[in-house]
Length: 160
Length: 178
Image (cartoon, rainbow over all chains, first blue to last red; front, side, top):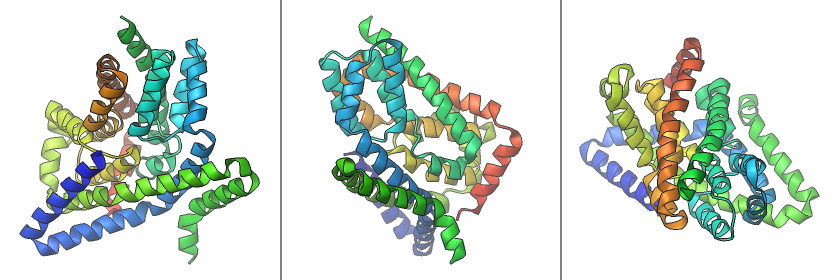
């Protein structure tokens, strides 16, 4: 659904640009292509990494992990799974909701959702290309630690 | 040709590893191929609008404007703008990185770039609405509140921890994209 929005904005922008200046629009598309071509090798690496990782960690496997783990270990495990996987929200949220109904802890689910969104281990090759090794690793490490803290807050807020 | 192989070396290794994985673990084969198809579809769907938008941004937004609104001296307004830009985005986080590079090239401050990345990863509005429906208002809103704080802390911590020279190097790299 949000992809449609993205297409809409891009189409409107492109139409406005075209009405204003043909040459500049051509240049924008050229730049778009060049930027894409520049990141293509990293894109492809990420694609293979993600496909492999998600074959092993499919939603069923993730569910059993998240449903089972309790306590601190469960939170740690949930955040680690979230860090490695790359699942769009519209797939992850219904799974998370079903797990919550099935009795999984809100803290564990929050750890999974938070680290799923903020931490991207498999997309590191792309992040490093623009942000360098240091900043990319640092951001992911901090985001992972933070997702655990955030999980305890959400767990507390939901039960309070 | 050698330049091509050098650029694509990591991708080729990843591809070979994937092929080996599919060949040697038949139990995972179906799922691996399914997720390959799914991820390729997602990428192909998301890539065109994102790159068109970053091309338009690059051509139409003058550097002085970007510096004024999101540069070093932009203050709270720059922070808020970075949050909004990221929150109105759509698509997976990897779409944010090339976009961030264009913002860098145009002179947005490093802290604001980090906030933009953070917002894109967690406070996207369409996703938030969906999260509220699936997991409840309390869950989604408390996560949003704590994540806004977290995005600011993480941006600030990275900015402090990263040497000036490294930041300058990243900006110099971003200059080359065009």
